[in-house]
Length: 207
Image 1 (cartoon, rainbow, N blue to C red):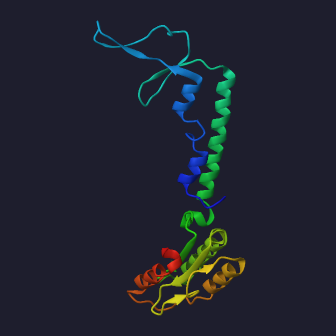
Image 2 (tube, rainbow, N blue to C red):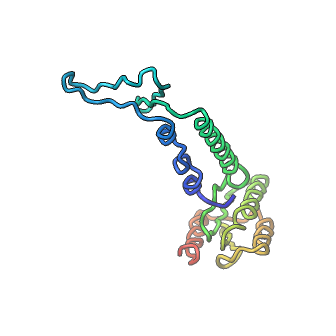
């Protein structure tokens, strides 16, 4: 799937966009049972002409009642459409909660700098971090324009001096650099802030 936000995804696949929200479906398979104000009674009174004539549906949200007039075929059509929408939503949720997206979300920017702050991670944790970073590089960074890696350390470490165009070669190079990092590199209490400032100073990222 392309790297798009859920908001943009819903603009294409959402229920409202496809006229499958409850109110939209009800307006296509029936009509609302109206209430009119009766002056002599001084209150709203629902018409009774349709009582028993049509099946009715009462919305839990506002208590409004709809008389259902659609034929079975049309209702089954909407059932099929809703089942298809449910399947799409399931696929989207599975995609969002799998692989690198489970940790990093969906990268939407075209130019990024990933700041690596391993702190005092144990060797096994350090390798887990590198595994996760390698995965996001291969799965998501390959779909954007530019990237760079900066490691927070006493002596700041950069994969490249500035963000670099994405290609198969540069992604492989970044992964190789990542796995050559020393887990015991010294850090200071200002390392994280310095690395973030360095990342933000990249003109391609800030533009």
